[in-house]
Image (cartoon, rainbow, N blue to C red):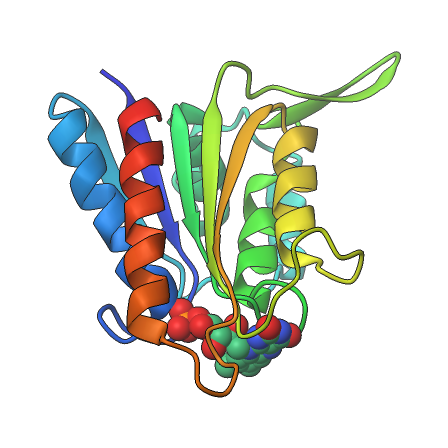
Length: 198
Ligand SMILES: Cc1cc2nc3c(=O)[nH]c(=O)nc-3n(C[C@H](O)[C@H](O)[C@H](O)COP(=O)(O)O)c2cc1C
């Protein structure tokens, strides 16, 4: 049985967000294909993920202290480390991802939990895990160097040791005359294919 962590980073609600229309569809299909797996949803806005505070930096140095294990700060990092698969749903905002997703990565990138320092430098502790990043965009980017959302998600996950990362991008949603319904449908079809193998 695998544990899937479904991380949602959009202020828009389900049904309205094009990202969530595709990612929720992905999760439905995934559950059909893998009924034995556990899927935990983590909506970063509902969780009220915030910027790091001075006391969080102090807690960072006490990860072995059992009394700190359930602090808001550390619980997300332990939860992340315990999952086997990650589904990250986040729209493109200003060439990157919503800031709350970066804030979340600040919560979960903790020495001794998700990565550690070795004589050769930092090394990710999350081995044999996989991720899919589902993103809706107003325009078209592909691999453009100024696309920094998917690039960052892949880089930070790679830093933490996750090497199997796919992207499902739905693009050109805001161009004039776009057939949004058709593009979302196409995104859901791609989601079906990925969910089978994920
Ligand atoms: C604050 C904000 C910033 C955005 N910045 C970009 C951008 O830099 N590039 C782009 O292609 N689309 C941008 N968009 C458009 C969204 O990526 C697009 O509408 C997408 O469908 C949003 O996904 P959603 O429907 O899941 O919210 C932006 C939208 C918002 C609300």
